[in-house]
Structure formats: C-alpha cells, structure tokens
Length: 129
Image (cartoon, rainbow, N blue to C red; front, side, top):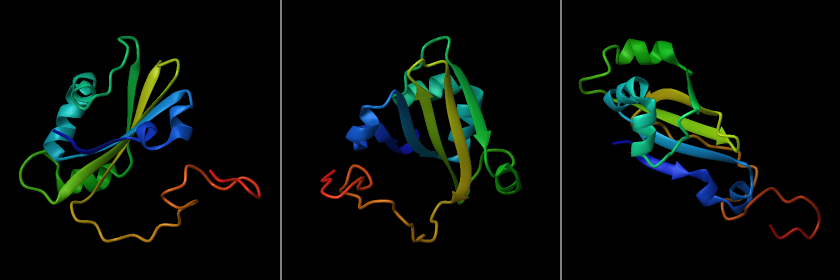
C-alpha cells in the first residue's frame, strides 16, 4: 500500500475552495507497477474516487532512471516513486506526475513562498492569511 498519502486540499483552506483536487503519495516499485496496471483500483485503494468516465493520464518524469534501477518493478530497491495527482471539478481527467528517487533522499533546502503555518503568500499590507 502506498505511504505518505496527502490530500493537499485537506491541508489548505485555499485549496479546499478551488474547483480541483490534488494528492501526493509515495510507493515502492512493485506498488507503482500495480498502479500502472490498474490505476483506478490503485487510486481507490488510497482514497481517490473517480467517476467511471474520468480518464487517467500518467507522466513519468525520470523514466530512464527508473528503468535503469528497477527495470522489472520488483526486488529490493532503494528507489521509491513519488506521485502527484490532480483532477478538476468536471472530473474528466485525473493527471498523475510520477518520479523515482532514492528512498532516503538528501535534505533539500527549499525556497517556500510563505511560512508553513500560513495559508498563502501575503497579498497586501495587513493581510493576515
């Protein structure tokens, strides 16, 4: 089962009010194989419900790295696959962008647009969002 499943709308009131959904999850190579083989079933298993007519589109960002390190999708591997999926209010397509990385990545210093406790970037003087 995928881990680190995050519903980004649950994390932000701003996103909850928008007409789309966004989700993040991490999985092993064999779990990713299951996603590729039966994406609707896999997504349902992590809580993402899609209408029967909703297309599922998948982009693998670093496919060459994945195929070099885990060509058969199985065995012990230090690779994990992180995915970010989103759909809009019409629910006509659920788009997933996936990328492989080391299981224990180096800490990356990120430039955040606002502090973690804030809902959004300060828009004008006096904005308390």
